[in-house]
Length: 341
Image (cartoon, rainbow, N blue to C red; front, side, top):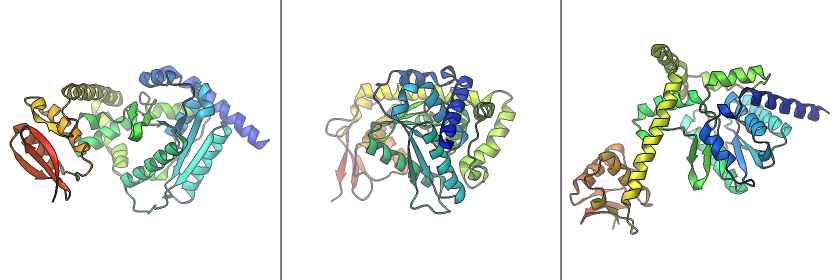
């Protein structure tokens, strides 16, 4: 009886939330994409128990009822907050099962208190990718919202990212192995989601580590964004979301331009004559594609990449180290990888 009551309660809450956040409030590109997907396609949704991912799970369940039989909940326990982390895992399992969904839980075997934000994220997404491969799922739904856009923008500006990096997080993005990452909440602010959850009588899990100053994102969230919004005197979050959309369009246009040039030959060489005289942004992207196609090339520093880019633009014969396995060699209007002997 208790399980039946919980099931009925969570389904009623999901319906109330969907009434407050209908499809028209979700990102239109995601809605159009989702409605056109094959009926037998399975979806996975990443759920931490927090407000964003819980909202996403309940909205998916309520707004796409035909997908419920093929919807899988993925929860990853980072094991960094002791009993609180275990409580998050129990909560996500309870909600998922009350909605009649399959729940898959994982945990970070190599967790350590001093782990960085990047290490935790890598472990989490490794789990997602592993479970999706095992279950032949190619679509992962993620709960990023409009505040996340602004936070990511500031973080990536500090790293010197270009248009491709500043266009993240994208509503639709192809991840490793052709798997799709889908983010329908990017048109909604965090405050809007919290208000809708409270109005629907829905409680969520709070991650106490989100208020600590250990992580860069937390510092941006707590100190930078409030001051920035106050200084702007307008809806700065919506402005950041608009800028992200425009950067994504610019990035796609540049990528399409590189596509037309076909700079990487079937032999895996970069044809310098095909990109000669093109804007630096186009040449940079062509060089980046060539590097990605070299499995034995080592990691280049930013300075090393810029030096190689300058050499490619100049077309001057020569060679530069690409790690212990070989060299980038410019000869006869071609850039090729040559193994070290």
